[in-house]
Length: 109
Image 1 (cartoon, one colour):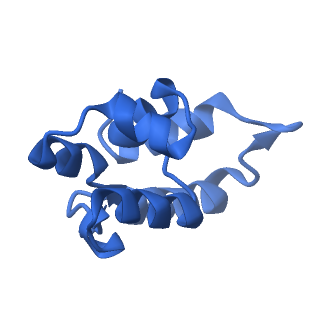
Image 2 (image 1 turned 30 degrees about the vertical axis):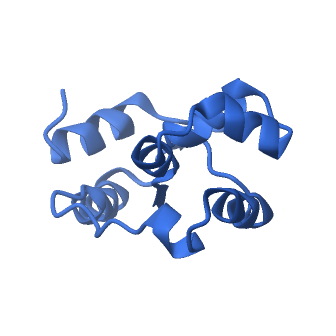
């Protein structure tokens, strides 16, 4: 899930710092929300929507899954590795050959 806080602020011509004041948050917090580094809590989303006079749904973008998702390739490689080598762990860390095996499966060096 991503938010559209930045876009709505821009559309309405509202500077970040006014939202920061209204929310009693730092500009850094607002910036991290606007850049989708962090997401506001559900209560904060509600307060932002009220402040901007929009529906909460207008602040949220639900992107479809990436078609180039590596998950299936990684799961297949994981199963193959387990069949060939056994446990991918060395103590509490992954074995480097396991990491290399997975990266090769998804086309990373």
